Image (cartoon, rainbow, N blue to C red; front, side, top):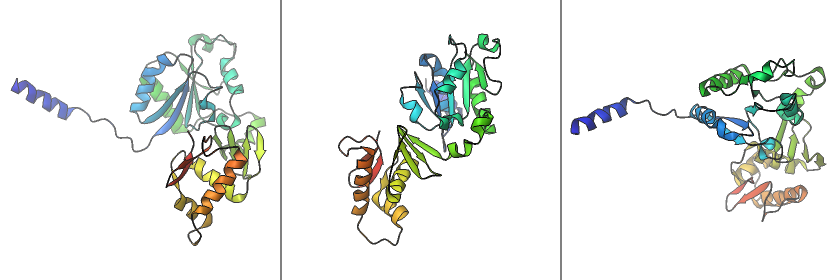
Length: 257
């Protein structure tokens, strides 16, 4: 027994250690059957990807999230052009994000219903094959080739941030909620921008003071609270039940869940 235990210890020492992820990238998967995505999801997570899976793209939080790659499972769809249907429901901001479509062989044999520039993977496939496609797409920075009408808008699209139903156009310094413009002061705009760029991390009052008012500002930190209160009012937000800006007591603020 002692010899067997020693042999097991040696084998454990020789076993490769799990990979420590110094940096992760976010992938959003959308599949009507997420159960069959488990193996691919596990393989991607082991390769240092953060993976979120949704049943539907519309009417879910998926459409309001930022991602490095989108994976849409349209295999088994009865639509004549399932890829085109997904494209129609995508916000212009997401049109510039690399996208991989999981399709079945029947779709590849159809008469040109799938665009020649789309990234496709016949599904189901081995998880490692899916990982290979993901790494190749991200390495080459591949995304759907835009048509002539939308090509001129891509620079503007890359300068936009999305959080829930809020959209920030950084080039024009404008904020929209559900398509309606919200008139913010420069300070309110910069506060909101800092929170959204922080992607949910806590922003201390001191950090907000230094970034927006500068290190030479000697007023009290309550100036942050005053402007956050004004920002919330314009967003239709509430401190008690925050939709956009949540208070971290004694510290500062962060994006609401």
